[in-house]
Image (cartoon, rainbow, N blue to C red; front, side, top):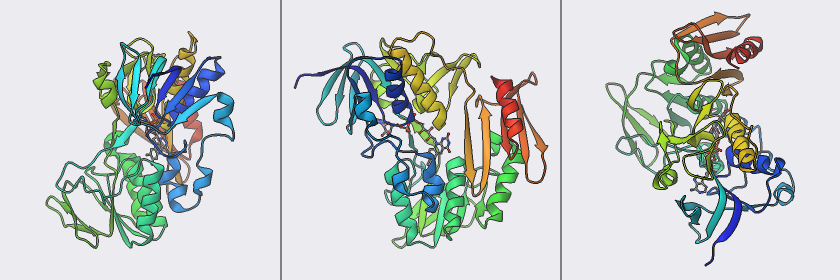
Length: 387
Ligand SMILES: Cc1cc2nc3c(=O)[nH]c(=O)nc-3n(C[C@H](O)[C@H](O)[C@H](O)COP(=O)(O)OP(=O)(O)OC[C@H]3O[C@@H](n4cnc5c(N)ncnc54)[C@H](O)[C@@H]3O)c2cc1C
């Protein structure tokens, strides 16, 4: 079959991919634009999958990201197909369904995939994971008939999902290798607050826990933990982190670092006409003056837009903003803005009532991040300091 010739080819239909095609057109990018998306669903909002969608407060038909008629007006072809090989010298991409494309510009926006626990039973298909809308549907269906759920992992996805599942009336056990949820990332005081929220909501925390095996019992699961009592649950949600989807990029010979595709501040990768954006990119942020690994929704969209604008010919689209995200644990919101590559000190500041702020500083006493709860003025202040 002869190749289809496209001006902009995007692999991945998350916020980075969608941001790229929208910005390409806004910038005046001409010609044929195709998105290859391995996800069978049309583009949707991922963050609600642990929050209001899981709790049943947001129906599926409110998750869509496309406006009515948008693909037609952007003149974008959205193909539910998987890219399986990229040849950057020939500027060619092959897909699972047998199509071949030659491109002028190519954007890798392949995102991340959840990792399995590297223990016996860790790859069992009846364990629940949460990345896609289909995962979200499956989780809701699985817990509808359950009484107990074990959530493994206390990153934001684990904490948010545990909280939402508890709201649904389930007995929830959160099993984590951390001493307190997200202690390494956010510091002791913030971790203690989050632990207090979770236990206050009736979630049982099993901390400092090394899971050694996940066993399906037929009726449910047994989580085996080194030196601690087993945890039994009707369902197990594994939220043990994600790995950027770089297999294609690696096979194509693109430069990788920190498990991601290295790009400059315009999102240009190491091959001519190739860009990367979102979770899969290790991108230069000009304000930070270094490359950053970021796994946030808004930043993925921002990076995608920069890639799209640059592909359309812009010279001045660059990544300058500090990365950040908001998280909802039960009814409580946390706002985080940080370069995300470490800090020396976490300075905890009590606010009025429940409010608090954590200021993160490097070895020179320079602000490198902030975490706030009910303290928006400090969030804004830190954002200004970082910018
Ligand atoms: C449940 C959940 C809740 C979250 N909540 C928040 C939040 O509150 N705030 C926040 O900032 N972030 C949140 N995140 C993280 C955020 O969703 C990600 O950082 C963001 O989706 C990254 O966007 P992306 O476009 O880089 O990748 P993705 O959104 O992962 O999209 C990548 C797409 O590429 C497709 N793809 C991969 N390989 C191929 C291939 N070979 N061919 C074709 N298509 C391919 C995938 O199918 C996928 O659709 C959450 C994530 C999850 C899973």
